[in-house]
Image (tube, rainbow, N blue to C red):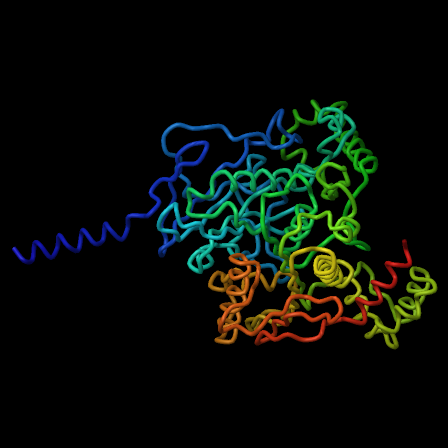
Length: 512
């Protein structure tokens, strides 16, 4: 009898442990069920908008349809249409969207929550993926939200339209939309996802009044756009931007006229005489012909002005900001210039400022010129952008900014090339997902991962990354510019590349 009771107790406990706190969750569109993993409820592939296919291709996202019964959300949705993801350079499969399925029907999001009830009001982080606006997905392995959920946030990843599907402009589309959304469908998708979060995340134990917008690379460009867009006002309360911004020099925005001209040429290339003709073509045909269309459009609707002016006049959505860049945020130019070519190019580009430029980007030898070229690419596209973002927010905004510089080099297998602290190397540490990355990590990496993810979670909770037991991370001060340096251990230091950034500040002022 005792043996039978003991076995019954084991079965009861097993069932109790397998039962999830959120067996079903009621969203505004219907009930959803997910999976339970290591104390975390995971919901994959929840629709936040209608599939942007057929007549909805190149239109603002529409409301998702309601459903009856319980929708099983235990599998990631298709990623947005893109070239089939394949590893390259340092970007192994852990950094990429799954190679399939890929589809226009991609407007879905994923939720990780360790809340035990819908009343907990945990801080929410919504992650916008990178990928140059041409690739990526919310289902990238290094974006897994389980560990951050265990640290106390409700973590959400989203998909959005990419490339020609996310950024095509055309005179006929402008007329169709009464001149509102011109080409920026990707950002409208992101805004729709945040609107879904505002309406639904409380049911998952999240606080709709404490939402952090976060992203890396193209995701950071997106954070920049949404932080400056009146359409996103009130949808988030903090912002995290890793490696990317649009404050000048490498600005990736097109005018409406240029974007429409590019779109008209695209239609002609496909022998389409109307948008109806383009919408009738397959997604594969569109993708194959659409290379090069992936730039945000200064449409005066989603993007209402240049970023520098908006922030300098405190017209952004003023929220606490955490931003920074990596030591390896730089890319080689199509052609590497010799020392003499580099000097000649500087004189041509910067005129009276050429000598100042060459002081901070020296070129006494070909090797030095090559290194300076890499530094220039990294600073113009990333470093100066994130520094400027922190500077403008701290100087003109009401909320604080926190700046970082990631220089820790993730360990690599002996038979693989070492790319240093490369572009994207940091987010596995911030997101606490090194366990999904095939590298020979050490105790140093694990400790840094725990510290960086703790800063991240603290910021999401309160707008301040600091907490007891962590080295102090001081808010950015333009008068005494410092940054949190993530080497093997976190420590505050004088702003890296200070002389170079001061040159770009001075040069930018001369262009007014």
